[in-house]
Image (cartoon, rainbow, N blue to C red):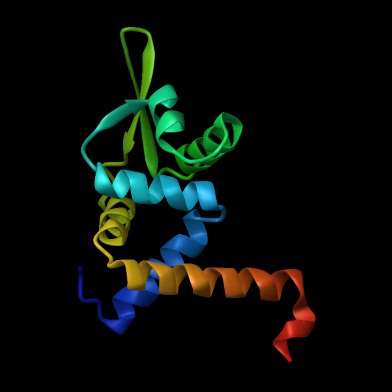
Length: 124
């Protein structure tokens, strides 16, 4: 489990806020954090996630468009891998190093933010 400074925690939270808009995107970020040097086909990624193929595909395409996931073609197959861009790669790997309690605290913070966005009257 990683020990994080307050600024690192805030930086990771902002990264999740920007690139982890859905549960599926957050699962993909955790997936790539655990396998930062691997390449997988879309089928393999969808199989590994706990969601529908359509949801996994939507999340995968969002992260590709955001530049967090790279695509490579080999023998007619498209493979997906974590970006080589260190600015986007580092937070994904750091997220995977979080302890369960730290990860859960970030998710709770995001869920709280989402509730406030859906119901502004809770802000009072």
